[in-house]
Length: 325
Image (cartoon, rainbow, N blue to C red; front, top):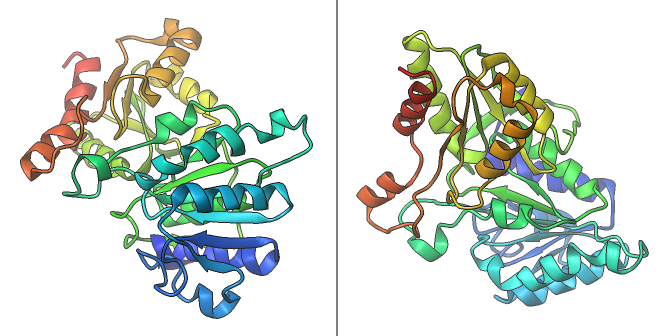
């Protein structure tokens, strides 16, 4: 095992797949000459050349359409968005073409393409640059949605995404690019659609994903000091969602708290809550709680950001609520 940064794990995944398959290429804003806006693609232009690491204009709809067309014709593009807030401009290509092409062509055209880049809040970037889009893309049949929380997961899941025959949305975060974690020396892939129980517990299940898991672990540590053992599930994949792992955990703990960075209305937590009450209602000893961002565009002021986003205290309060403490 060796320790690498989150950005390095993503770079390794892309580079290994580009060495393995000449049809894989990277395209996006500043990915080549500038080595990536967050230095994720550093050195890749030197290794693979300008035919496979391509800088684009600031025209998300345009270069996303090029990527979709390339995927339909046998290539495997990796499309990097500087932020998924900018990918709003490319949603026509992602939702109306990439996601639907297999069905609309009667199975004649696959679109093996990965759309990746940072998602969610990253400090004082204000309302239009601080949005979490997991729910929006997960709503669309034909798309797979992945949100890794560690360098290990990022590398294994991205390699799997690049080899997948379907379009994949791969969410990262500016706040985690510099974080370090261990990965194996040899090649490995992780299965898409399988959650990870990262912490065993008996009294309550906490389900979350992405960088907000850090707040969950802080909460779990504080709860443990009080004698409350929480089971933590990292979803890793949002669609397909690993309902089985969640339900089995709830059957053991009898209580559930879901934590996510996006807004509460029509959320991932809402979907999980429906499925658990449908399949494990008799095991629940308390109503399901969810901890989300406030139902408002994210503010710019630091104090209001802290009030808006999920944090360890809110997680602890929700756990204590379902335990009737």
